[in-house]
Length: 265
Image (cartoon, rainbow, N blue to C red):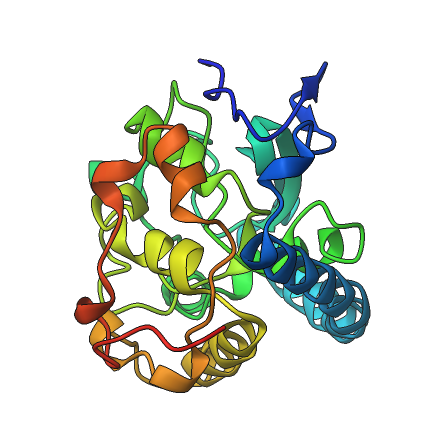
């Protein structure tokens, strides 16, 4: 797998784990606001993530028993994805595909065919991904963020797109997951991730969680043009950092969103 592009605002050591800013002059008021937002996001992941993980455990266990009986095999399998700053993360998923399906099959290749209607229902409602919640209180994933990408050899993408979205923790849900175009591969609709990077906020996280809950019980998907103005914020990553890792051509202007303008942070 190719290495992520270096981020000039961070010093990295073995394992692609970013540490601290090495140029204190780069920290301006907007940056401090983003850092404060990230602290709040981490606290939400720890507190709310722990609550949701505890609630999800009996649901996961019940679904696992049903799948074990229906499929006649172990109901879990492990998936390796790429997390923040290119660090690999591994998480469990509930098995919904035939055992012969390649572990890293892309859904546009015709190989992703659920075993039956029940497993198709689990995939459609994203219930097969519930075990990912167990990683949130450990801060290996976030409740909300870009979908964790497969390794490059299985899911090749533009390096600028890949490295920009990896500047934040990857999420169990996000704008793409609740979006009207989630039947496309995530890198085919990069505007969802870049809207989140550029205009994200804690308000947006809570709104995405709410829309995810609605979607799981049959609610409607969203379009970027329907993202409400009040959830837009200062973003999780400033545009300079996105440009620095080669993601400039994926930046989206605020006039593509419902507000037509970006509100004050």
